[in-house]
Image (cartoon, rainbow, N blue to C red; front, side, top):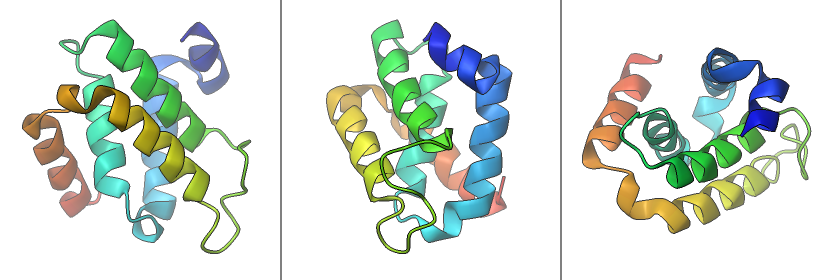
Length: 112
C-alpha cells in the first residue's frame, strides 16, 4: 500500500488521478460503474483493511501509466484493467455495498 501511495502521490493523488483518468476514458470502458463502486469501497473507512488493499491495487493498476496492455490500443487497451478489477472484485464482492454502487451510479450520471 505504501508503494502505491508513493507512486500515485498519496491518497489525494490516487483520488485525483483516478477521477482524471475516469473523465478521460469513462465512456470507453464498460466496467466504469464497477470501477467507481470499487473506488468508493476502497476509500470507505468502514471497509476492512484487506479489502481496501485489494481494491486499491486494482485501482492503482487502472491509473498508473505502465500496465501490461497499453490503454491506447483499440478494444484491447482496457482488457487487462477489466481483468485485474474483476479478479479484485471477485475476492471482495461482499464488501462492495449497494451504497457504494449507488454512489458510483450518481457520480457517473453527474459526470464527476
